[in-house]
Image (tube, rainbow, N blue to C red):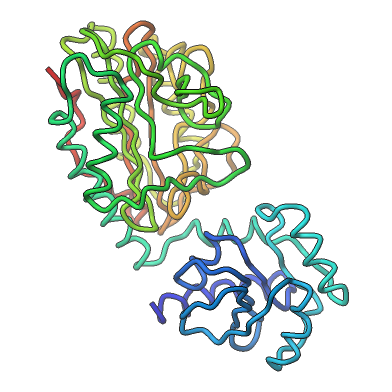
Length: 385
């Protein structure tokens, strides 16, 4: 882990020098974990030159030099005690900190110019280190192990919620952390999404691929108590959160026999995915991957079902790592191109009214030659009965 952190610090330092920044201060959980290897209550400071330091509100053993503080207003004094010069230009997490916290830090470092660093940190986290990739491989393997056992969770007469609860139990028994991290305001989710039947058509205010009404208006997403009946598709998109680094995978299960239109749409999803696997490589545009998927859906006469019906998501994939929705995003307006070390989920999905959602999702690593699939599991629709 020491070598891992040094690698990340070096990447951040080089980025800060390029931006003319003297130091970076982070305090949000995912960035703290990325830069220290654990979540702490306090602040991590990395100067463009010199050793990093933690300023902790609660004690923690990290192997990084630390100073105890109670509030951000004490930071300048704590810097002086630690022999750290105050930065002329200080980078803060402008896109993730609450406004009040950001203003408190600005006032605490009144002698410094503060600049936003959230987007820079997102872009650095977009390229994974070898250690991060191995963590994602581990999550993907455990996620596949649990998905293989899903048919054993099913009992006739169940609701979607009852089936999801049984899957969640398996997840926890196999090491799931239990929290599905998503970046962004109001991006709330528990341990993933299970959609059955007509509930797959329900739009959600959350910016995920598909919606679902959920159990209550306070969390309008996912399973809603639908009774699982003959001819229903059950889409399982549960978290691969078996390490801090997540994998993302969707598979479809069937209660009885699905109609031909659903089977055909699922086959198109598999075909779209296979085409992406053949064409994706460093330098390929994320926008082009989206357009290719949409074109194939239109060729199949399924454009109206692609990524929803009543509300259609305007992306077909997304970066993944510490958050389930990292950069890059595979949208028609994306300016990103694939780079080695990126990890992303690709999810061409279709909603068939009255039946449910079909299609697959897998997590990929961008290599020097193309892409490597990390979520290795049979992709055909699996019968529950």
